[in-house]
Amino acid sequence: MELVQRPRRLRGSETVRRMVRETRMDKSSLIYPMFVMDGQNIQEEIPSMEGQYRYSVDRMGYELERVAKAGVGSVMLFGIPDVKDECGSQAYAEDGIVQRALREAKRLFPDLYYITDVCMCEYTSHGHCGVLRGSEVDNDATLELLSRIALSHVEAGADMVAPSDMMDGRVRAIREKLDWAGHKNTPIMSYAVKYASAFYGPFRDAADSAPAFGDRRSYQMDFHNSREGVREALLDVGEGADIVMVKPAMAYQDMIAKVREVTNVPVAAYSVSGEYAMVKAAAKMGWIDEDRIISEMAVGAYRAGAQIYLTYFAKELARFMDEGRIG
Image (cartoon, rainbow, N blue to C red; front, side):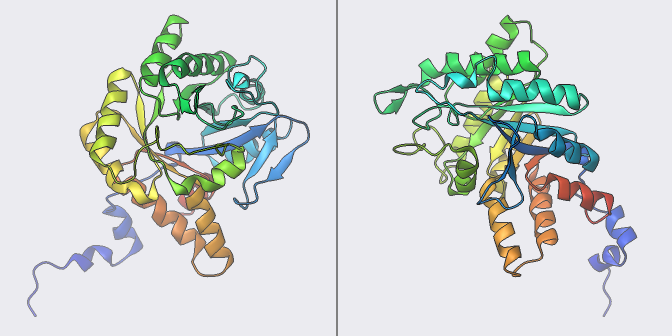
């Protein structure tokens, strides 16, 4: 048979496969999420996220060292306070858990890049992402508190802040507050396209942040919608977001692609707790090749257009890159 076009020619060896690879990754694009909590001498495994832990400030240095040695340069911090109230006051307290963790992390590993989740769900007694007016989250009243949280994080040492609450106008409120305080050069990575997703279940276990009543569908996005996600991303860029995020990653690669196409800022994707838990559970049963699944999930997000990847598998992916299995 006379075939002129033979795509298999470029698949014949590892050398040529790597030479023509369309999607390339490197460790500098990885962000590792970490949970820090009040207390002392705590390294507590999260039941629904095997291999992931909650750390007290005095123990988190051991994990930060492992992250740094793996070559992962960026960490996203989530805080779990001992005390919660209706307005989530520990989220913006000078001695709050994230604020103390930042100061200690900066002391121990100053070369790591620290990003903080800006939200209220872990800090409120009712588990919602803002202050309540009756049984509804008051969008505009929440904005001032979110901006206070962001400023308190930056003053404690955060290199970047990442609002995840999905309140309308939060990026603008945070940008104005940071600029007013002299932090014009601190970037904002917005959870711009954040869906109301069942993939978050293990995170709520990890952060003790499940709503005491109702759900978050009045502020997180309906997973049936895609044009709305594009609108959210464009709004956040217009308000000053330096990076926009799509969350979750695995089931929303179409949104990664659409957001990448319409925006002129870097696009991040968050491979969330449910994705992690599903992989770990299936691998434990011997049903999947864990390493290959981790790699395929990551490459899928990058292939769709993500330039930044938040994942609980960051250390593993860094190792795979070192070993030449992906990258």
